Image (cartoon, rainbow, N blue to C red; front, side, top):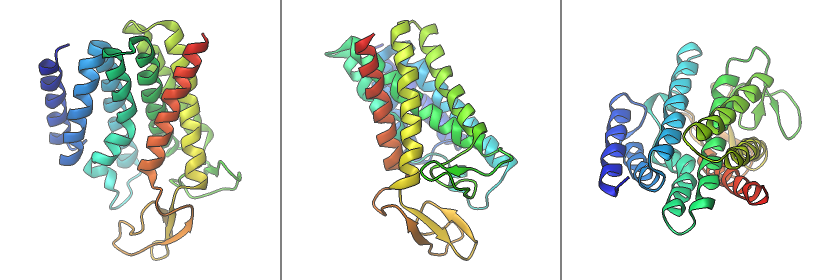
Length: 258
């Protein structure tokens, strides 16, 4: 796919995403740039994988919010630029490698990174419907729903389904079976690392006014929240960036051994 065609298609999808409020304006610009890189480097196959992640994750996010609304939840405004970059940059790097100079290794990096991003998102959004409270991955103690690093059986199964769907589609669009299996391993590893980092080093806060956990120093109610664990310099976007990188490079490592 030529760069011009890739840019036109990615730009169109970004505009649609902004129009239906799946993306903020900054998110749409970032999505157009990352989409252009993936479409140009990985052609129709890469475009299909990115579209699966973007559409399925956006629909699940809206569904979980509509059925279990959280007042002031920023997710209803759409993904911003930092969220798009955190979830898509490593996949874009893989797509560039497909074009030059490492075509074979680019696919495991791309598919593994997207599998990790999709697994984490599906786990979060599907896990929100669990009737049992999540448990912190690092300690096993029960925590409030939505707490970073909190896992449920339903969410874990949802994440496994998300990773499997990405690996399965990759084979349907012509990716080698060895690459798809490597992406499955990378996606599961990245999803697990995301939860582990969220449970340990990610900055976590509590709004005493609302008696609820949050990820930012200022809660969506407008009041300042107090930090209860983790490092303030590491937020959810940073964790996602590391986790998708882990997913991509574990996939690449597994592929090299197959």
